[in-house]
Image 1: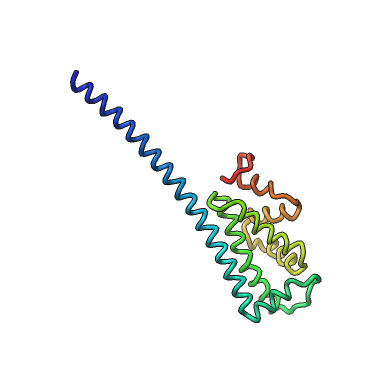
Image 2: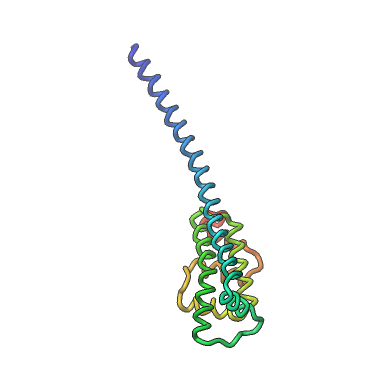
Length: 175
């Protein structure tokens, strides 16, 4: 009888230890998830900030940027079009990265919305950016999900569709 009581106490203690361990792991996972989300947002923001700094410092990039922000479609050579495409891809790549992180649930939803809103502004305001976006879709230059998110934002004035795209349950959260 004495050994059965000790065994029962050991089993209870073991169960308590397992529950405590699971709670600890859950807490650490939550803390780690927040840290990854913060780091992801920071990296994308730093990249975009450095991109803008590089444009401000480089005369050729400034010229391409000013040229791309014309209210009418500018005339361009094949070389200029190539330069602009590289310039535009270098800006849209972190936007797509932010979208991908949002899909994986490791990026803040407000950052995703910010970068989709910037893409939408460029595409809807400036003909050269619109041509770039149309060409990239034909060439499948970005992921289908990123194209879908930006294209839906071009059609809508709100961003509720982004949350639906990120949450397969349809409840509107980021998975």
